[in-house]
Length: 242
Image 1: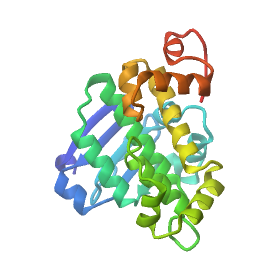
Image 2: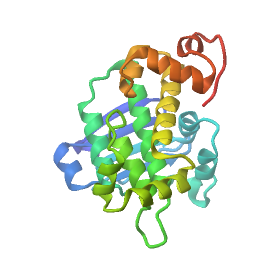
Image 3: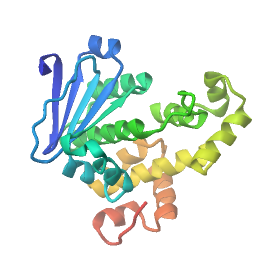
């Protein structure tokens, strides 16, 4: 069944199966299967653009000490594996394209792919509204993360979603507790913290990937947010957490 998929091994306990471009555009879904460390369950990946297979221990490594991992692994069906389906077609197509066209290699590629897996995990656990439609706040978040380096303005978001800016801003702040600019700035720095701690990507490359025109600007914002410069954190001189 995996013959039409590109198999990307991201390390022990984590595999990505990526459909070819035609299949991905025709089947804009992703599936995530979390299984016990010693299990070898088959995963049905038909009509799927991206399939993720990972073990419980790798899930905990990816997510760290956050409730999400325990919530997933404590589900009644967890002894047979947790099967998650992601239906956000725009996000799935974007992630498939990101993976297919990335220029990263080696350790940077593995970090990049792990980030994509986390995106899919978060998306799969985002609860829809009672009427089955996604809230404006979640729609804004998705649009911001399509290209966080060049995100759409509030005027553009208003046009894309067909809702007044004031309503969008209020819905977003109610859901996430921050304004759109503040949330995006915090997301960039939190992502920067993860990349700095990973210890393999040059600081200037991290800054550029997060939308900072100058390394000094990133360093100043990072130091203000975490209380320690990124170079010092990477060297292990001081512990910090997002």
